[in-house]
Amino acid sequence: MTPGVRLVVLGKQGAGKGTQCVRLSHYYAVPHISTGDMLRANVRTKTPLGLDAKARMDRGELLPDTLIMDMVRERLQERNVSARGFILDGCPRTVVQAEILAEMLAPMTLDLVVELDVPTELVLERIASRRVCTDCGHIYSTSEPPVVKWVCDVCGGNVVQRDDDTEEAVLRRLAAYEAETAPLADWYRAHDLLTTIDGVGSPDDVLARTIEAIESRRGWGRS
Ligand code: AMP
Image 1 (cartoon, rainbow, N blue to C red):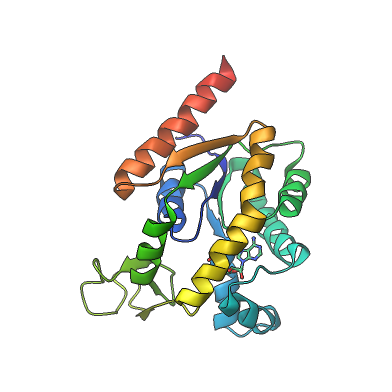
Image 2: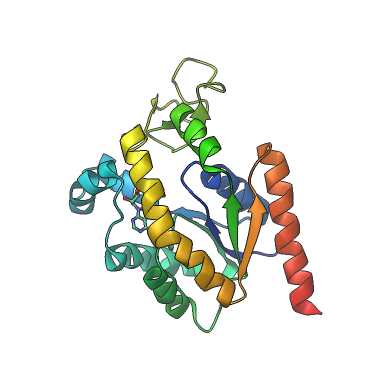
């Protein structure tokens, strides 16, 4: 069986994180943990957390570090997920979250942090055409819609544009990424955990590049 992996995937909104994380989680047989998906599930089922988070999410603002990391801690503790591994998507978003995650995992560490690099113009194009299933989170685009118009191929749910994929909210999220998340890449680089992958190309090509980076890192780690 493929060994598991403890991986964080970073990248601007629309860099293809969601798509790559799903594929990586199948490849390594570890759960895909997306804080955005977890929050949207809370919004959908109208939990107190979801009701509290919705307005800030719609505006494209980050939620408090402790709230996010408590949610992640609970998820990592389920059936000891952190031991075999996980693909963490959308978290950490700040250096404080990265520090809390490192404490949470100790004495284990992440295997690698992958940053998907895509130019902002391409990201804006991708987000404008992005559509997503409200039930299972499967991602589509206007150029590759579900077979039956706006009915999810995977689960039959409704496929829509995300409330926070408006141009205004996207620009705010990109600014938040530059201000709060880009320093995170520097932090992981300083901890010798970061690798940057060219995120332009077909999903298969980007996946192959990512797996190659992970495996060469593991080989390097063993030598
Ligand atoms: P995403 O699907 O990752 O783009 O997340 C959607 C929204 O959820 C973000 O714009 C934030 O409002 C919130 N969110 C998700 N993950 C985090 C995080 N790690 N820290 C703070 N806010 C988050």
